[in-house]
Image (cartoon, rainbow, N blue to C red):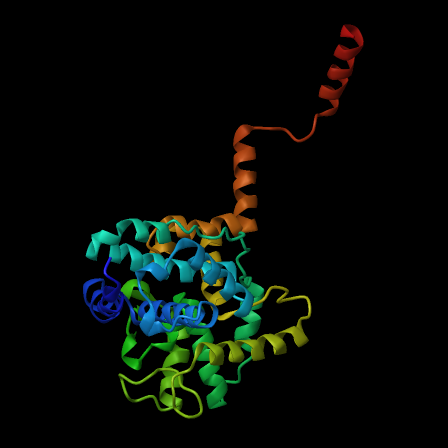
Length: 335
């Protein structure tokens, strides 16, 4: 491969391929961009190669593995984040294989770097008692707390990812006989999610009381009128979780994050007997295999299935008195 082609292909990849041909979301492009920024930092700091001097020969499997280890040690990233960074690198070199076939073997070497096995983590979610308590805490007469309640109930009711919630606009809400929210999520996909009338009333009251007239402005804002951030939303959630724990120390034993609201809604739908296929569509998963994690993690569902299948086998848990006497009599005569 010609050494002067690396910068050209990387520029085309980010400026044209990802946004125009692949139609990747802004979040995906930003994530991939951050990966290469960190990769360039690694080459400059550890390999003493500045970005403008990078060429194809610089990218080998050992160096990519060293980069990933460097991230784990210096940035303290998790195994899943490590794998995300590697996935971004793999995506670019797969793209490169078709644009510059002369370097097919070298690209294949980078693509051979394996993903790290990620331990299976339990799904953190709130049970119904915890959810009810949390939503009872905000004072709806206070505009700031009304915003918090509208945000948390909508996050739960819609099963939205936190970025989907951040990107919501008043125009995303549809009030009527059937209330819906339009969510724009991963893969640049849009889905309409129904919300119940109680949550719709809270959100509608918030929009009226907190003056959100611009249909295309952010729905939830901070004190400066700016979009809430992931950290800002987590701060709000943590505040109410702390209050809830003072009232019920026995609850909220799991770490509750903004994503726990999505998990909680999925679990509650599953416990109510809703089919996994519907939950898949509700959450915006590409495959029902992703959704199956809730079935595997829900103890109530497991217990119900075990009881149902045990009953179907007709297994008796105890012998009757007459059966015990018959069994003892048989043992005495046969042994």
